[in-house]
Length: 205
Image (cartoon, rainbow, N blue to C red):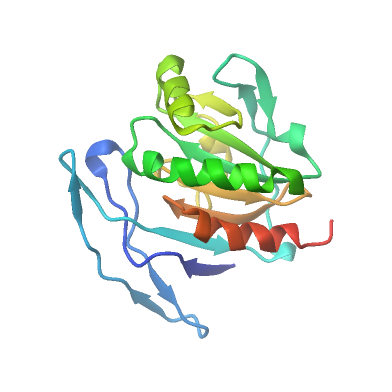
């Protein structure tokens, strides 16, 4: 696996339930340089914006676990519905500030890539009330379905090294064979996710 820093700081928002380790850059020889953090105070929480991606070589990719349930409208949906397509899985909560920060970017890239066979699937976590989560979706124009996972049970099915259930938001890119190709911890932008998604799209099915 190869890890690439997408931004130069850690995201730590413990008061809001968002927890990340410090990130840094990784050189070609595998050495690591930790990045300096620039804290910002938001609603009493210390937020350091960052995202880090782990790109997995095709031969080393683990299969994504069975992930299915009811969406925010009560309709059944799951990863298997999108087999044969590249899928972006985004873990979010309406209570999480960094999730709000990345939501508009996710909406834009979802609209841009849907004609290329990309599908998005959200996992809404720690929101006991679906109505609150639906309001978040409407506010940010998110057209893709999200599984309602208030207890985080679905998150525990994924390899913790690739999807830390305590790290919100997180994003995975699933390849056409249903394997985890990219893992991203932290709020991600359109400019950061786009090139990683393009790499997986270019692969031969």
